Amino acid sequence: MDLTSRAAALDTEHRDTDLRHLFRLPPGVYLDGNSLGALPAAVPGAVHEVVDRHWGQDLIASWNRHGWWSAPQRVGDRIGRLVGAAPGQVVVGDTTSVALFQAVSAALTLRPDRRAIVIDPASFPTDLYVVAGLAELTGHHVVTASPDGIPALLDSRSDVAVVVASHVDFRTGRLWDLPTVTRAAHRAGAITVWDLSHSAGAVPVELDRHEVDLAVGCGYKYLNGGPGAPAFTYVGHRHQAGYVPAIRAWHGHAEPFAMEPTHRFADDVARARGGTPPMLSLLALEAALGVFDGLDIDDVRRRSSSLTGFLIEALDELAPEVEVVTPRDPEARGSHVSVAHPQAYGMSQALIARGVTGDFRAPDLLRLGVGAPYLTHRDVLHAVRQLRAVLDGGEAEALDGPRRTVT
Ligand SMILES: *Cc1c(COP(=O)(O)O)cnc(C)c1O
Image 1 (cartoon, helix red, strand yellow):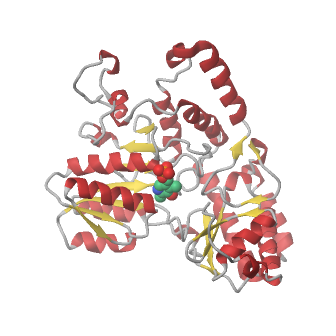
Image 2 (cartoon, rainbow, N blue to C red; image 1 turned 180 degrees about the vertical axis):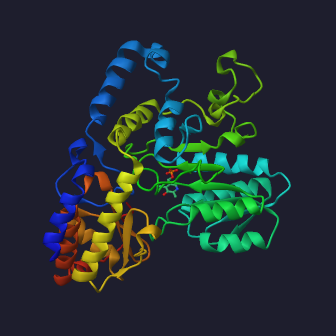
């Protein structure tokens, strides 16, 4: 079957999970949902309601009347469903960077006698920066290891307090073996902090089932929460009593309105709350999560695997000169496909000019993110055909100038 017929057949096969009607999509093909998810159609009205009625009319009463106070945990539970966390273990607020700082600092206090933090050197830079800064502050040392090397590393040393790893590599799209790394960490007596930024809303995680200790993740990628949407933090039930993050803010206090001079942690996951959350963004994220109502994360994953698999197939057939660096095994990849090419930057720019938005990651990667609910196999094929045209026309070379734009 040729690619056109295959795309049509696959779209028919996966029509149940085609949720394009729940989004507002601009013309063209958007392959950057792993950087900023598309706009769910319910969000503008929800934000308008929050601004106009909650803020504009009910003002301070909204904390109770419109559930502002409970929102970090309410929205947390909705994300929890997508990452395999039973209710009462996820809160939303702050950026991923701050959430990670908090989670790792708390993990260190859970292992006070140990002096090392292990992190994947290929982590998203902010994760590396946060861990380096925290280690400087506390006097811990940082050891780097790729997730597939972490089990062996842990078997060889007993001073590791915390293992910090990303479930999906933001460059290559490689999906790491979370259960194996988590088990190895526990054998070695270490705490795991997983960054789920590139898996939440795209890949099943099963945090409870795999007894992950702590996790954080981003709200504006596959969860489609909008620019700057707050991040989430998972604190497994068994760690909640001992969860002591470095920044103790008043919303995490046992009695926030007692206004006591000394901090006392709430005795549930509320202790992971920070200061006043960005309410407009938080409630935009809540509205965005409606896209997943009635959907199982396994349904999203099935669609995503089919789309990324077909994307690789089309690249192999139509653009064999680019090198697919994302694993071909669907079990070992997240929801984006990266290709390496010396003119990847020019390619990304030429594609944007043709209405196909992916992104460039230094030094030579073109990333094609698949927000499965709003993309079709036809979209994917169209994007690869545009890439073929870019290559045939020498458009990438012409645009491969100074790399100023970082999207
Ligand atoms: C996107 C992303 C972040 C973003 O951090 P912010 O502080 O929310 O900007 C952090 N970590 C990973 C792995 C990411 O992919």
